[in-house]
Image (cartoon, rainbow, N blue to C red; front, side, top):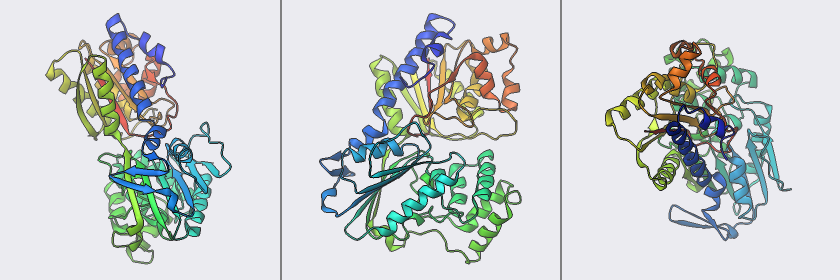
Length: 443
């Protein structure tokens, strides 16, 4: 079972109908998650040593050595699928989850920091670079990329302390992930295609996307893909969000040196290295939403996928979703959406975008016979131990009985405390994947 507090979340429904709706949402998500598991996703495209993808048949048996590299929240499950299917010479995986391990002599696993990089991020990355540099023409490198890779794969142009401070600032600002990763690319020796600067052989990159619309150049900051952004873009983003003067001096100096041409740019599409690099998206938010839809229909629900590319301020998006559904006025129907919203952190509370999205909609849920759940598919919503939250038409009444004003908690970005008291935090722990966020709204 995906949800650690499954029975508690169901029992918090105020009547039999609400309890049934809560149960169905959790059951549908549990079944869908099992189907899009990274191990199954990768295993499904490898048959008898051949990678079958995008109408191509890549025979791995023709290579002298096959090296496996992985970084991201899904790297362990993806890596195990490859190791169970292909004869690998050496493997390096960087993960953020020390509870998931692979017992194999040829593999080295680094447990690194997330969302803030640490020394293990750098150690693992340097081990990866060594394998890339030692590769030969008749070898093959398989690279597994998933959400969280921007932090876990780390070889900074600036010191680690300066990178940590900069990363903390970026994450607290209401930036789009493409903006954050533009800056990350230009503070790194490996992002923006630079991971493959010294590669000598063919590369196959299998990617589970955690960004809206699956832009490969921004997923994990595009280490295996040509970069369209520049040092000047990075500086303009920092100025736009009013943090240029707040970042460490060494960061400003590095970016300015890049603009002056004193530091080489990230790799661009005309670089011949990319002639032997093949990038494939093998999983994304849309695949999860479609799987959820399939299981919802099996339970007898009508369905509608509202969007798989939600963006915007989380607290506002939640309210808009519920208002849109109220206008439709259909019953026994599951509405599905996914994407990645943002939170402009101005308070000192605790939570994440999914918890804040549900909290932002809680007044709109009143008396509507609707259950709304939103959660981060990696199991980690913001700086909290929750994956998200669930609410229904009685949640506002329950909160007011405890003298909890939703507006107060929204202003302080303290959605975690709000749902903790209601016992409606969704708890999964790290899931071993990252397909952005998903929302299920059942009426």
